[in-house]
Amino acid sequence: MSVSHAQLKAFHAVAQHGSFTVAAQKLFLTQPAISDQVRKLEERYGVMLFHRNKRSVKLTDLGERLLGITQRLFAVEMEAQELLQDSQALQTGSLTLAVDAPVHVLPQIARFCERYPGITVKIETGNTDESLHRLFNYQADLALLGRDVSDDRLLSIPLRSDPFVAFVALSHPWASRASITLADLHDTPLVLREPGSVTRQIVEEEMNRLGLKIRPAIQVEGREAAREAVVVGIGVGVVSAAEFGADSRVIALPILDCTRRMTETLVCLPEQSSRRVVATFLEMVNEGLASSSL
Image (tube, rainbow, N blue to C red; front, side, top):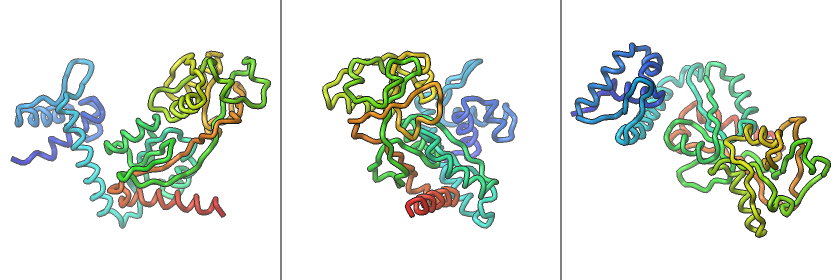
């Protein structure tokens, strides 16, 4: 017996948004209609796809596996829809990017939005592992990763490469210095990113290479949290020079003997690269890289 497309669509919407109410809004249906579709799907196959209570909806293990399938299913459906709508010249549609640092791709997004105002662009932030997870689960069309990529499952475009800098609060004893070395970080309280962060991985590898001790002062999620922890004096932070930005509350210090660099790479799945909205964005990125190299 064939699976009902309407029932799968209802399940997918609830799974994506974690709510029957939000799913109904997204599909322009009533909540009872969505609930009925999901209930019929579960009853037809004698399974449970969601754990339900008054406050939340959570996927069961089987529901998680089915979501992986429906993500691929509706990604292909979107690809077919865009193919049939090519004549609209990108007047409508959406593009989702999972990025580790938005600053590296914002200029390209700005040009894309200016040229194609009918396309809704969404940015999902997270570390490199989280961005890859979103890409492979069809939750993003493109991902920006903070490292070189050698993976046959991906098409990749290297965007830039930058050195690392340490940064400290204005009240820190190092605030008057022009630079530091990795030895200065030995047994120094460090503000570390979460596991899965390329910045953290590289800092740990560079310190271990020289036999230096890493002393975590605090672990935080995201660059903004790391910056705020440094500002209040919890410890020393490390970030790529391109991501340091402009903040008068902190001082950047080049790490003279750190040979590693942060490489930002834009990637997508090969099967997604032919979608017109994705292909157009990639073309725009390549055009920008070519013009900047002249």
